[in-house]
Image (tube, rainbow, N blue to C red; front, side, top):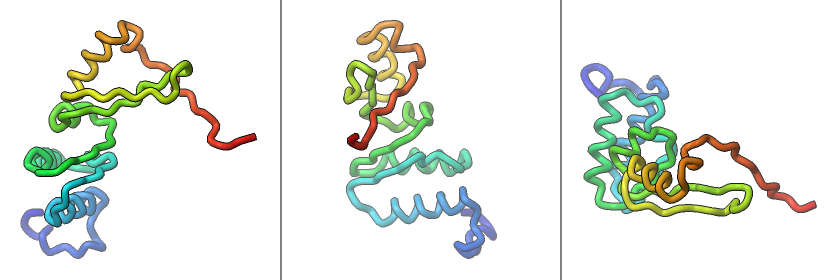
Length: 128
């Protein structure tokens, strides 16, 4: 936060500002594992850059769930991807590298069909 924004009360912060504050507090507290669910939502470019730098310098493990492929390309060192299909609904794949590398690997492993969007199917979680 810069200028007069540093003096704002937490109750008047916008959603993005609250996210920024929570990320800063979490990173400041330390720990060895961070669980981040869609951390890039509602962040401005400056805060996003700060988050990337903080994650690059974080000495522990950060588990990030996101749809932001660009962010994954910048910060991910490993990808755990769900690759389930109707035939193999519980299939997961572990890849060492960023998202762009994972996508190239997936295309090489599974062929051109892997690049096509597919419909996600859901299994019932209850018993009849």
